[in-house]
Image 1 (cartoon, rainbow, N blue to C red):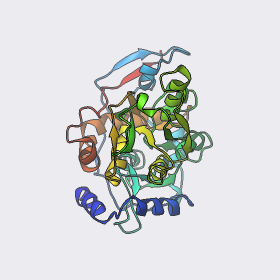
Image 2 (image 1 turned 90 degrees about the vertical axis):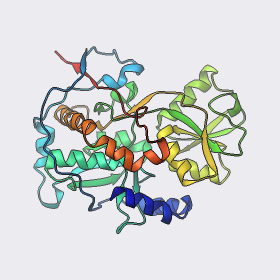
Image 3 (image 1 turned 135 degrees about the vertical axis):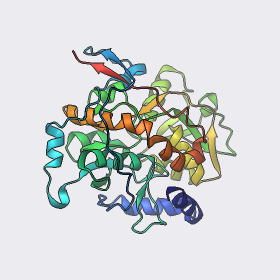
Amino acid sequence: MYASRVRAALRGWGGVGAMAVLCALALGFVLLLPCTQRAPQRTLHAGPPVAHGIQARAGSCQESEAQDQTLSPSGADGPTIDAIKARTGERRKLIVGVDQNSYRWGYRNPNTEGAELEGFDIDLVHRIAQDILGDPDAVQFKAIPTNQRISAIQDGRVDMVVRTMTITCERLGQVAFSAPYFKTGQQVLAPKSSSITGYNSSLAHKKVCTASGSTAYTKLADDLKSGTLPASTDISTTVPNQLDCLVRLQLGEADAVVTDGALAASQAAQDPTVELKGAPFTTEYYGVAMKKDAADLVRRVNRVLVDYRASGWQNSYDTWLSATLGKDSTASKPPAPRYLRTS
């Protein structure tokens, strides 16, 4: 069923302009979308995951190990989960911040009734809702711009964010993360006719677009300061959502986009005049972000991810991402998780 939807979306897409219009219309309101896409009914069995632990030490986060700074899995309820379950009537839903304009990750499919939310991240949200509330459709989706992901969690607007969000040490000081559910890296996206060859000196005198609050912007700023990037590289063009960079590229207001390779590949699928330039130049891991004090919810999501990696992750990858990232998912599937030992 998913595969047929994807084929239909590709046939009826009508170019990225159509999607940009949809996104512009949709960003004006918070999504309250009743979902018709149902995840399989599965009982999640608690059991020891094949993983290792690392000792928690205050202030010890190293960027190369940021993805390991998470709590061990547990199927037990706690105060955060109890509060979610205590919601009544139509409010008894998991409130999740997502993207609605990242093709094949979290996007509104114009070929479905009500422009249904679909994608790799959306599949994971349904799986988490199934486990916590017993219904994969018990979700209230909220469209969250890239630069508001953390504040949405801290302000309590959402229970969690599932939105291609990279786990970093800086962000771990503000929110808690699950174990990683996807591996990617930053890449350059530019017109096929461009002289840009990758993340190198070919970016000299070029205007590069990134999403504000993204790891791409942080990397560019750090490398410009250190001299790794040519001093003439212009990184002043930032946007709330990464898809807006593709529009800037199409309008000639930017020469290149830097974003996660997984997202860039989906953007290239939307516009055949652009392509990825060069290899990934970072290694990053996506995680589910939650409040720092929501330990029970973090452990529960990690419990879900244990089973999801074993059954569900590959099917979702095949449905949404294999067309852009290749049938071999080895490079995208994160390694066995490591968890903090807190005692």
